[in-house]
Image (cartoon, rainbow, N blue to C red):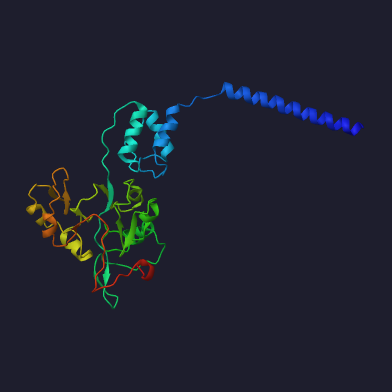
Length: 295
């Protein structure tokens, strides 16, 4: 009988302590309650939840909070686009400008082609065989500028592919290419590229200079068969004066460009091309990718 009494006393004590602690916690939750702005949840609902970081914040939640505090502009979510921006603006009671969709462009045309004997006949030339970790940042550190003769070209180890959460990038013949139909313009790939090759452009542009080299023409020619040599032929033929040559590299001012494509017809390197992923097949040569070659 005494044992039962002791058990009941113990249960009563524990129950009493639980009740006391519960009351303390309930009181603390009231005292220390921090009211959450209901707009924060609504802002989060507008965002795609991709947490790509393209807005400059760690995730969608961080960006929503920054907008709420007035620390970030509305319209920085490339994944959400214009619809997202307008919805967020309505919640915040402000007007948002039109958000223009952008897609990523890899500024390199150095895709390597090989003949039937395995000799490279076109593309960005190699100065060394790289057999290390298949990562662009790691490869770029080898020999000071990486295994390519061109220190500005795409290394092709797919670091940008890993960074893309939308499957919009693939490596074709050792150069990354963007499928603009899948690209949302978050530019996570650009942040991952150690050579700064990837830039945002308007989709559908057929006059895109896919080269990043600022080396002199002779140096570029020795390094790559497809690099811009700064010859200026595109500049001379442009009827709108939209092209300039800066640091040995042609650049297009899209506020002047009417997308006529005349520049592409005179480029001796054929590097002014359609921004969409191209079929790089060539019956005379066959591709050799990193998977089956020491690069």
